[in-house]
Image (tube, rainbow, N blue to C red; front, side):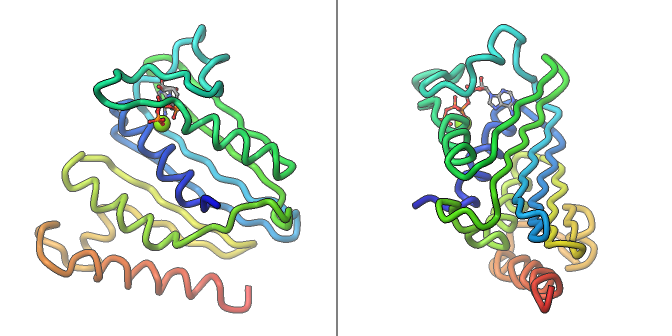
Length: 186
Ligand SMILES: Nc1ncnc2c1ncn2[C@@H]1O[C@H](COP(=O)(O)OP(=O)(O)OP(=O)(O)O)[C@@H](O)[C@H]1O
Ligand SMILES: [Mg+2]
C-alpha cells in the first residue's frame, strides 16, 4: 500500500513541474473531527479551465513522453480519498497557481498510513537547494503543530551550504524533534 507521504511527494512534484517558486504543504490530522486533510498550494503555471475537469482522470497528462508523465498522480490520490470517505478538490487559476485539497476519514480502515513525514519534508527541503523552491511545510495534530521554512531551517541549523555530507541527517533530526513535540500525548 502507498503511504500518504508517497502521494504528497507526487503532488509536490506536480507543483515543481509547474515551475512553482513557493509551495505550501499542510498535513492536518484532526482526530476529534475524524479527518485527515492535506493541502498543497503553489504559485506555478496553473491549469487551464478546459483541462481542470480532466486532470483527475487516469492517464491525463500535459507532460511530454520524454519526461515520462503517466498521468496517474492526481487519479491515484482521488481514488484514495474516495475510498476513505473523503474527496479531492482541485482549484486552479491559470497562470497564478493551484491548490489541491485532499480529505480522508482519519479512522477509515482503507486510509493509507502517513509514512515518514520527517523524511519526506527533509527530501523536499533538500530538493530546493537545486530547484530554488521556497517551501512552507506544516504538520498539525489536533491543536498542536509545527511549520518549516527553508530560511528558518538554514538559520537554525547554521547551514552555509546545502551540499555538505551529513546535511540530510541534520535536517531529519531537526524535524524529528518537531514531530516528537506534537505527537507526545496529543
Ligand atoms: N500543481 C499543478 N500545477 C499545474 N498543473 C498541474 C498541477 N498538478 C497537476 N497538473 C496538471 O494535471 C496533469 C495530471 O497530473 P498527474 O499528477 O495526474 O499526472 P502527471 O504529473 O502528468 O504524470 P505523473 O504524475 O504520472 O508523472 C499534469 O500533467 C498537469 O497538466
Ligand atoms: Mg504528477
